[in-house]
Amino acid sequence: MNLNDLIENNTKKKPPRILLHGEHGLGKSSFGAYSPDPIFIQCEDGLGEIDVDRFPLAKSADEVFKNIGMLIKEEHKYKTVVVDSLDWFEALVWKKICEEKEVKNIEEIGYAKGYTFAMNYHEKLLSGLAKLRDEKDMAIILLAHNEIKTFNNPEGENWDKYSIKLHKKATKKYEEYCDAVLFVNNKTYVSKDKGALKAKAVGSGERTIFTQPRPAFSAKCRYDVPFEIPYKKGTGFTDFLKLIKKKG
Picture 1 (cartoon, rainbow, N blue to C red):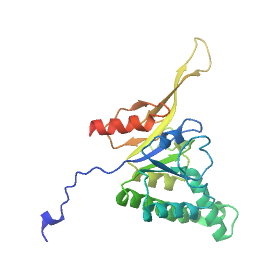
Picture 2: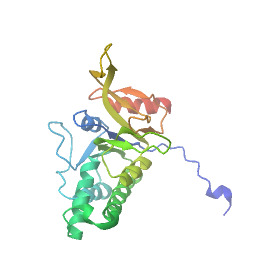
Picture 3: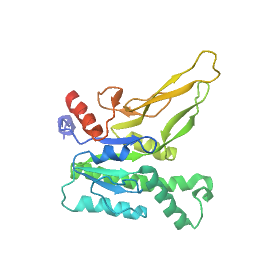
């Protein structure tokens, strides 16, 4: 075996792996629902009246893994798997660990080992999703809520930012896995009247997807797309996919 035998030159593009995070009510589920032939793995009861194929609401982490296993083993029409949502999946994982360790709260497991145990389940989820992408050629969409956390700045003052609502170890793992971590929010403008002590936020209701990180929020994108993408319900994922293909 020589060097040329080891070098790969495969230009075939694989389906995207996207994580979309934002506050509740911003249309995250609709983003997944309008992807190509989606199937939802429900960890929370948030689809409402959205007409889309879905597994029954998962009551345990094991049910989530069972659903993924069925998609891997059986023939089906689906081209996109949507996990809705990651933070509710994590809650199911913590519940399972607490039952196994016979504690009421994951914090009761000393030395933060509970969160280390939880990573085994997050990695199991990612392993299943990788098989769906590699063996079934499925796109991956992971939905998550966010929360405001303090960023500990080693070079100066700390600040608050929107972060994915997961334990920091899990957040890092999913951010590394995904091709795009997108932040969706209402476009907000800050104004301050002359002489006023406080500024006020003014919103137009215009929703925007942000593709690159800023001090106020977490994001990333391996694709060459604009920093801001207008988010329209029913076309959000389609618009993003068109930008990927256009640049490709």
